Amino acid sequence: MSFAGDFLDRLAVRFKRGALPDDYRAVFDSDSGRRVLADLVRRGGMMVTHGGASGDLLQFEEGKRFMVLHILAMLRVRPQDLQRLADREVSDE
Image 1 (cartoon, helix red, strand yellow):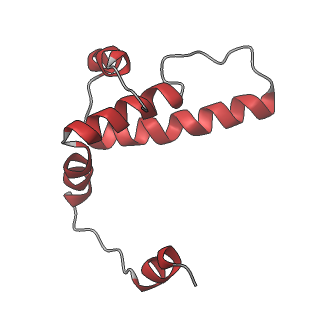
Image 2 (image 1 turned 30 degrees about the horizontal axis):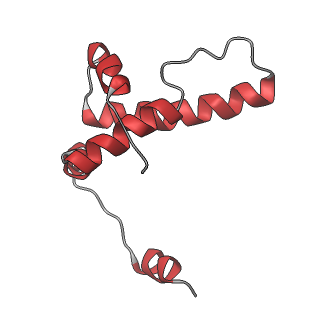
Image 3 (image 1 turned 180 degrees about the vertical axis):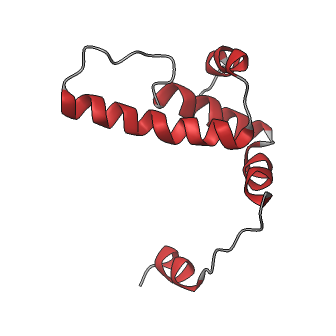
């Protein structure tokens, strides 16, 4: 069994009420976390409309958007800050 499988099999996830948004903040509250979040915003299609996409492609793209929207909601990112986040420079070099 892989390390990830062992770890996840032994992990009992229980969250205290209200603790999860703080955990998201802890993950993304660093330079690395902010770069990853900016990359997720772009790759998740947050700044793109998918109106002309076919049904399957639209579902796929909206699934990506949903996960990024969830992260942004947990971080309580304001809509007016989304463009600033999307414009953040990210390099994968």
